[in-house]
Length: 405
Image (cartoon, rainbow, N blue to C red; front, side, top):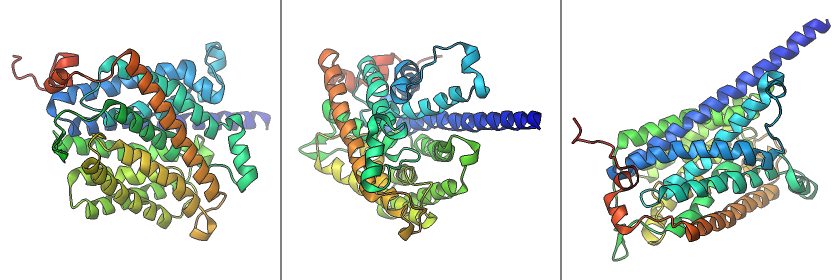
């Protein structure tokens, strides 16, 4: 009997390891989505830079999170022997891999907001600081119960802050750090003339669409695998992710007037918003969450780009991740309630306080990081460099080199 129990335990441990490893791979693949979404949106002279940034940010994020960020969030380091690290089929290692792909999404989000006018090395330094300090501080606060914040919310309002897959922890934090970075860098040259918007058309709609599809598919790993164990897997999370994605498509289709940029970002808005409550909402609540998120993205992106000339958010990452992420944190406290068909166990006040704290940490941290880096290593390209494009200026090569044999 003991032998059977040992085999069952080993099987479950292996299944959990495989489960979260598959999730890590799916979220890892989403970074290709970030890359192609940005490549398809920026102008031709900045396409190479978009690709190199996402890959480089991922590598730097992995190192910083391995040596510092994960320790700050969870109090875990990887300086034991390989024999110790490989225990339980190496589950803790693939858990790190999974959560690291979340952390690496922070600079990928920021990259889309400040595209086409940022220097390379200073942005890498800023990315390292965000992934090594700002993000893991709030991550540990929410997902590891650090500093007693979650306990205080539970004692005060009957439930802790609920963010199953990161509407606030990942997306809102990334979006609001990007908000600070966008303000520090300012608008692209030629973007506004006489206070009127000059539209820079996306360079490649098929690549933009490819990026949106890759992100949408990978998101089911992002959400469903956030259970982090095979016993916690839930079809409800998958269904809610689907319905929120559909809601974002429909509202962006209608409000965005069939604009391909809006339609392909609409599903992402819905998916951002449903992350927090995807495990507790009713599918109809998830649909409404996505409908509101898609409409919110289209309206806010259009309004801000036309009304605030100093706020040049190339991919719309602030409304998409920052604001729709905020909406997702609040929506979990509404549609997660039993009175709205949800599973319960959430408090709107806890969701409100936790969401606002995430934004506060992100904005303050973002301004400190980008203003500090900018002071010692200016982040902005010169006017001439920006005119020539980041591809030639930084990488000495274009996306299509017609002069090469």
